[in-house]
Amino acid sequence: MSPKPLITAEDIDTKLAEMGRRITEDYAGKDVLLVGVLRGAFMVMADLARHIDLPCEFDFMAVSSYGASTQTSGVVRILKDLDEEIAGRHVVIVEDIIDSGLTLNYLIKSLKVRKPASLEVAALLLKEGVQRVPLDVKYWAFAIGPEFVVGYGLDYAGRYRNLPYVGVMEP
Image (cartoon, rainbow, N blue to C red):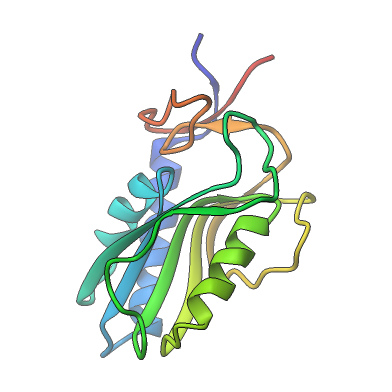
């Protein structure tokens, strides 16, 4: 059974192009380090980076707060830390989806103590009405409701990440 499409591949590309242009303008004359949050953000980061017309470097972090559940546990574990030093660098955290905000809030606090020159967030999806902590997300593509979504890097039990669109799981 395939998930019901919610956001098309074309709409995703259009929004990521807009986001890439904004990042290019905001960081003109600067190098940017994109930090992808694995595993979900790998597709977002790859396609977003293609729309940023600046020197970019890439690094990745892996964090876990879900396990096999569809809702965050609130307990964040860093499974893979950055390989690069970020002190004095312009860092953009790239996320696939922000729902409760607990994981991202933890990640932001963890990275701020490393003294980057700037630290912003770029997310494909913001789930409205479920945030448990206030977050300032400068770059985001789509606001969605509370439904559980898959595709374009997002998974359910490891499946559906390869879909070119974002879809809703049917009950």
